[in-house]
Image 1 (tube, helix red, strand yellow):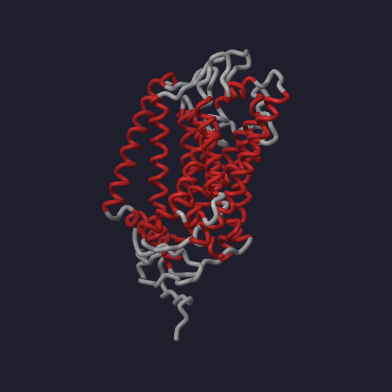
Image 2 (cartoon, rainbow, N blue to C red):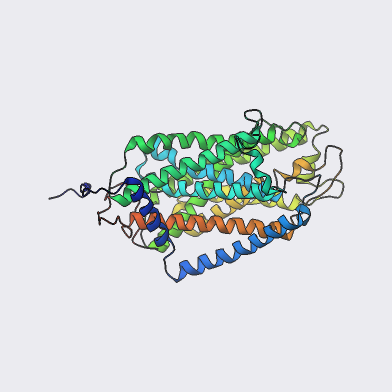
Length: 436
């Protein structure tokens, strides 16, 4: 009786490996755009939102940054706020690798690729937000090595460029290699991807640490001059990433009618119970230092939490974020919450939205208000900025959806090599179901 975990030896062929890989990419793309009516409605909606955002960005490039709510006083705003959050989301997505590979949690192996694919989509969106924040995106080449002036290693911005693009390439290699081997019906060679898996853990920490150093290294912005910024960024990433993954797992289970990931959800909930409390503790520590010690640099914190001299644009934002995170933290403490989908999804949504506000509007904008000359120039995102933001998020969801469909097709045997080889049947395989 044959062992179901064995893989039949591939038939000899003279086709070069690179051609097989291109064939795999072609099949992956063609299969990823096929689906039921729910899939087409979802993708049509995302495409429409993306086109609205693309049109808004085209007008921004044509008319200049004057169509945004930014000014000489507040030069980093909604775009950079989303960039900061997405870097954390990318880092948090790959943190699924830690329990899966370092602690050999077999149940977490089922969702490793879900986190890796989230990292790819998040980094792409983060880079797009940076490009949209450039007044002259056609001059982006000035930052490229050799053809431009890279200023490495002096500039923290060049470090950010390196870690983001490097992180993207690492995750693309890991996902591409594992999916290709599954498609070919061959077991993956450990030395071809395991070192990159562990490298991705270190790199995930580095991308958010470098982003934090980019802010706290600016001496002229006292609001960012705190040693807690990097740990706070990493802790919040371990909230937003697992929150997104938990919801994604439940959506996939509902669409594929295959139950998987129960153990993974329990692990992620356990992680979030700790990290969301640690994040709230760090926020409280910074608030204590700002308001108890006083000083000339507390203006930004006062403006953020209570308003300053009649200006209070961000007060509603930050207290909404605080309320969301506190309610989410309390909800996560409910015993066996993973068995109550409504409560679990509500807590994940509140935590995700709360971190988005806290690391975005509540972290970036207050550093510019009041200005170095103690002037108060408030910022409110324009309609153009909201359209561009919605368009980039829509494109990110499109990329993530298509990547998930490719993964599901490969692992559910809906897409095979042209040789007709049977894909691997393994206990650690990604049990996604038959179709989406």
